[in-house]
Amino acid sequence: MKRTDEVWKTAQLAQTFLEGVRGAIPLASEQLEMMLRIIQRAKSQVNTVLDLGCGDGILGRTILTQYPHAKVVFLDFSEAMISAVKDKLQTPENNIEFVLEDFGQTSWVNSVQNFGKFDVIVSGFAIHHQPDDRKQEVYQEIYNLLTPRGIFLNLEHVKSTSNFGELVFNEMFIDSLVNYHHQRVNHQSREEIAQQYYNRPDKEANILAPVELQCQWLTEMGFLDVDCFMKVLELALFGGIKPQN
Ligand SMILES: C[S@@+](CC[C@H](N)C(=O)[O-])C[C@H]1O[C@@H](n2cnc3c(N)ncnc32)[C@H](O)[C@@H]1O
Image 1 (cartoon, rainbow, N blue to C red):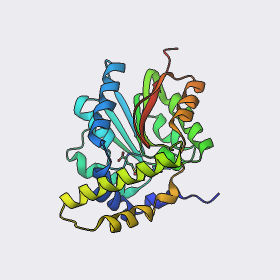
Image 2: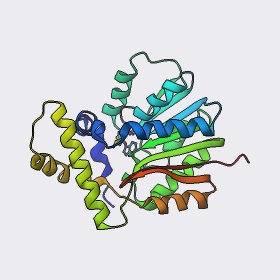
Image 3: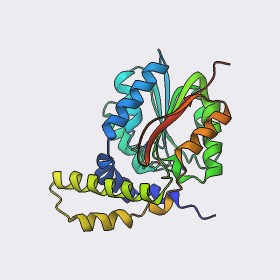
Image 4: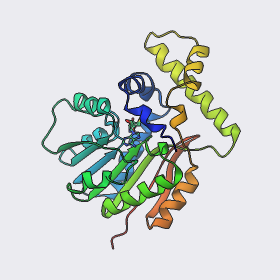
């Protein structure tokens, strides 16, 4: 099967996403707050973190604000994204690692194994580029990389269970893009922004799965306390905890 996710390796898409889309994601700050709240409740100590498909490292960098001494591994297969993390971290500490790797291939695990197991693994809007079989393998690989009681949280674009839900999601996202761009003195019309949204180069790379199904996979794999902790239409924060033994 032809891979559609590799469009993300281009510097142009990295720039478009980071400058024109990431900040427009509806309820983005609430999602980050919820992620931190769940991690804080699940873990009294966080020593090691993996941000899988990190982009500019927004998830890992948010965790660092609460756990500044944690070792954080930022993994992405786009060089442009890895340099964006480096720029945004400003003063890279010794405890930060960057890994240029493709988690679509099972070999990515070898590149992070030498950092030991992780207390927290987070991923944002990245795993949905994999076909469902590979998504499940990635979740199993994540499970194997966690410490006992380690937590996995996936902030993800998930599939609506109805066309109606998809329609409402698309409208909400376009409204959010319009507000975001108009605040930045980009006065494109709603129609132009909607056109760009429906024809975006990464659209074909989305292989969405319903959050209920993905939570079921995690439960069957052995994760505990599996839940969809937050969901607004197609944007969901879900995950689970690896058992002690
Ligand atoms: C939509 S962006 C999200 C970035 C970031 N996690 C966030 O929440 O803003 C998806 C990211 O996943 C990365 N990505 C997609 N597929 C990947 C793969 N197979 N291996 C490594 N990185 C991947 C892309 O390069 C991109 O940085």
